[in-house]
Length: 87
Image (cartoon, rainbow, N blue to C red; front, top):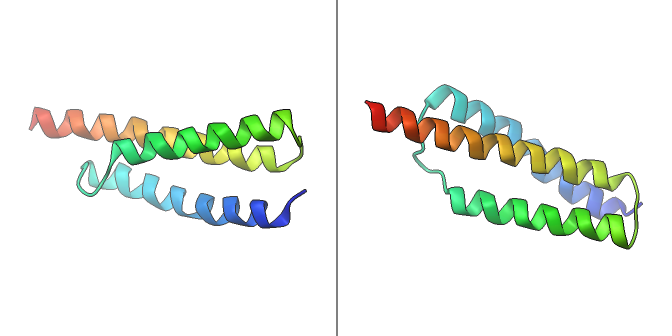
């Protein structure tokens, strides 16, 4: 297991629950970039593929968790955009 890679993913992952909470509460897309979130998810996909192909280990779980949290935030972005358009 690569501890530095795991540390990076833990640090990135620590910020997503806060961002998801803010998206839920604000019901706004202000300050959000959906393109940025899609690019992040693409990076997580490449990381997952690398783990699966070259070096399968438990760090793959961290990639999956981060990918899911960013995906939730993407869904909230579209929900919030719809809310903004309806008001």
